[in-house]
Amino acid sequence: MTLTNTSTSVEIENTQVTKSEETFKPKSGSDLLIQALKEQDVEIVFGYPGGAVLNIYDALYRNPIRHILTRHEQGAIHAAEGYARVMNKPGVVIATSGPGATNLVTGIADAMIDSIPLVIFTGQVATSVIGSDAFQEADIIGITTPITKHNYQIQNIRDIPRIVKEAFHIANTGRKGPVLIDFPKNISADLFDETDLIKDEPIYLPGYQPNTKPNYLQIQKAAQAISSSQKPLIIAGAGVLFADARRELTEFVEKYKLPVVNTLLGLGSIHGNHELNFGMAGMHGAAVANDAIQKCDLLINIGARFDDRLTGDTKRFAPNATIIHIDIDPAEIGKNIPTDIPIVADAKEAIKALINKDFQTPNNAEWIDYLNQKQSDYPYWYVEDENEILPQQIIEMVHAITGGDAVVTTDVGQHQMWAAQYYKLNNDHGWVTSGGLGTMGFGFPAAIGAQLAKPEKKVVAIVGDAGFQMTNQELAILKQYNIPVKVVIINNCALGMVRQWQELFYDGRYSQSLMPIQPDFVKLAEAYDVKGYRITTIDEAGAILEEALNSDEPVVIDARVKMLENVYPMVPAGKSLDDIVGVKRL
Image (cartoon, rainbow, N blue to C red; front, top):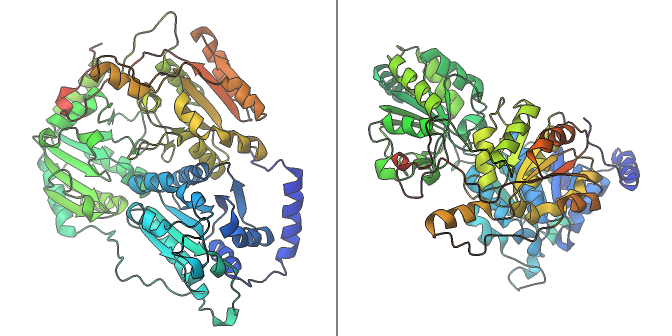
């Protein structure tokens, strides 16, 4: 499928700009910025203009990089996150000063906690008035210091090439994350003499030297521990995906017959139906995955940070296990769970070192048999309702129609957990969700970014009715840029996870969690000239989903599902993984 801009006027403008590009030479700080972006092979930028970045946008007009004009800065940064997640390289965002910059804060924090590489450019008032509370001034450096991997404020036009080059390097190496560059308006307008610039200046960051190669002695200790274990288990996190190590992980698992469970963000690091994949662990993870953690004698964490949604009560987590923790960020090792064998390294490099070590396969046949039986006895389950559609049924149908090959994005909440449980991924970089921050409104714009990154793939945004309303203005750009995202709204007329917790822990007092008045999502889609569908019965669901998901156009599907359905299994907050509820033997 081809993504094009359907606006004739935009096409004409871009054609005119292309003709003038041959004779254009950088003359201002903004021109220098665009040149620096091209040197970093930036193909697409998400943004929203304003006064402080008008010089930058004028440079984009004269020397273009493809720009996606979202309808809100939050949409821009979540789209950039989706792009970065499936491309495994930095997404780029531009916003103006003041409210434009502060509207990015949620997305920056989301990217920081989930290790998503972004390079963000914010406009700033002129250097002569910084600190005077000038119009649309905000201290975005101060605001974002805790939620960026690094940030800069450009003070000299000659620093632009170096800073941009460093920003992309920092964002996409080590533990990936967002880097912000604050761009005062006078710097963007200043003129320069090209002969004064240092060309191809090497990156020199003596204080930033992430370690990617594992320590040989630690690999040797890990190999010995694996060989002598009888109940080994791998937890595969997002670090495996960021390292592009799915092939290595699969080879390692198969060579030594090691069972694997995933974190929420690690889904896709091994094929969803692999015989040694025992599913997602954690608060809403599979019974077998959580049981495996609690009973294993060796736990090999590769690229996960032992967050509370995975561990539950840390004092009772994996009580019988020796812990091996492989992570590129040394700050994560030992932070939440005491570690016996720490390995600071890139996941791919560490797995390759273990494969090449060629040690004895552990004697764990009985352990594998036990896990297979547990998985068979205690699968995910639901009870069909004659009168209402269950959200799990919708996601199962989406999986069947797409064959597990779609890129799936989500918001946060019940629909996110059902998607994680019932959409088994065939491929890596096919799962885009907000994990650590849990950001409502993330899923739809993230799908836009993912589709622009992978135009040949089917991209499905599985969202809740509440979260979709936070960023649904981005429907406008589906039509404008012909982006064939499929939006599936799991519509239960509620803040589903909030309502579930109120039912279970607050005696059913649904305080401000029900939303009986909703827009007509079909009419809303049609108002943006996007095809809308509504599903109200299970009998019509299959045919509607088949038609909608196989369309070459953007679509919105309003699936009216049972309001009071809960996500199970569930480990209540602060409880041990042994305290899992909602498990049924089948």
